[in-house]
Amino acid sequence: MSGDSAMRDARILMAGCGRLGQRIGAALAEHHQVFGLRRQASRVPLPLTPIQGDLLDPDSLGERVPEVDVAIICLTPDQYDETGYHRTFVQGTSNLMTVLEAASRPPRRVFFISSTAVYGQHQGEWVDETSPTEPPRYNGSALLAAEQRLGESPIPGTVVRFSGIYGNDRDGMLSRMRDGSIAPEPDSGYTNRIHEDDAVGALCHLVNRTLDGDDLADCYLASDCEPARLGDVVAWVRETMSCDPVRPDARRDSRVGSKRVDSSRLREAGYRFLFPTFREGYASMTGHPVP
Image (cartoon, rainbow, N blue to C red; front, side, top):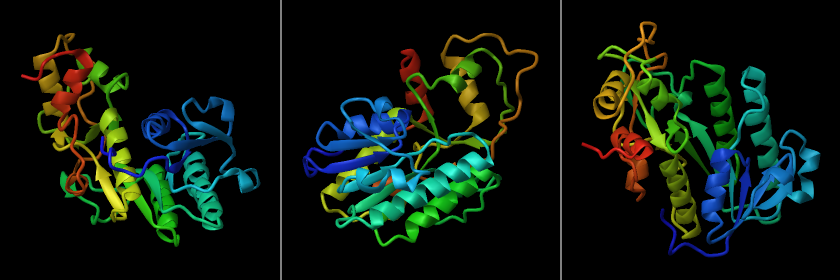
């Protein structure tokens, strides 16, 4: 992770302290004061400084949101349907931005954690930060609306669109590959992923660049360096690790859109991946060496 030269003792707001937010906040708290904003302050872990506030209740924010150098919006929907996504991402982001914009000293930059779900490409196309965003589902539409609210603000903003996060104990897909419940065809759709440690590292790298006074783009794609067909990923896992026989009812399709995420801009900004492909990432989860 970058940051030894970054401004020390900066004040950072982490709005949303779910699993990813907690990990990013804890990493940044090694050198900065990080405030964790959550509806239940008791659920904000140390070393973050807890702040109780509800993004859906602007009156609960008010004077509770401190002046900070950087704000990070890393939200989890309160329910996984269209209403929940709109309420959390669109309304919640807009309410917080209104509070930050009214501050006597607004943050230098606001980061919004988004997703490659904002893209609708599904024929194996490459996508980058300039590609059209036509989300096919409500989750991508809500994220895109929140991104647009960030872009309308006078405060500089950066959107970071993550692909599928895996790694550590985020092992659901790996478990299904190893127990034989996924057996896609060789020409299955392309998939994209980022190890959780790289998701944390990439965001911290960009935050520290901001604290160093560097200019950032308004959007970065955060995905590892090698999009891969799901069939190729499963084949590698099954050739490399101990796995159960393929089940008769194994899923044969990828059930996801097929696109290839180009994260060149993030790498050009100086981030170096700990796990540049799925091979290093999955091997790290099982202790297997990469062939």
